[in-house]
Amino acid sequence: MAVLDIVHFGDPILKKKCNPVKRFDGIDRLLGDMFDTMYEEDGLGLAANQVGLDLHLFILDLSDIDGVENPLVIINGEITASEGESSYNEGCLSFPGIRLDINRPEVITLRYQNPNGNWETETFSDLTARVIQHEMDHVNGIMMIDRVSTLDKIKIRSELKNLEIQSNEKQKTRPTLDGYNF
Image (cartoon, rainbow, N blue to C red):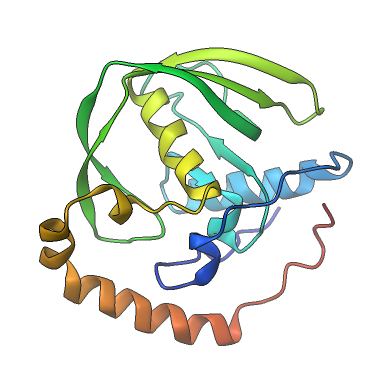
């Protein structure tokens, strides 16, 4: 497996609503590379567009934190219900070094496809629900800074500008990911 480059704030793919996954054959290699990347970066979740792929797909692994037994692969997901609300200080691999308080529902029901293409519906709560919502935002072109006040954005303006400059330079040399044909 391979560790992929993380896309940072400033890359246009983070603002794009990702295309649905239509083919599931050969997806295991991509998923393996995404898990390797997420573990290497000490993340809890990772969306395909965070590694430069325009796919409505993300992974998460909270097995050491939230009691979830197995890592999850969410493909073409849709939140169908939610309840409650809480605030949590979130970080993001695409915003290294930045943490923001984000309000999100505490419980969600999610309809999604698994790596075999079969549809499933599950209800998630607590940190698992939060990470799913964070990654769902990614595949829908919503970044965590879109969920905070203008004042909060002003407070991190210089960090965002630095990330944007670095991202623009990185885009010029980012390898293509043509080997993933979905």
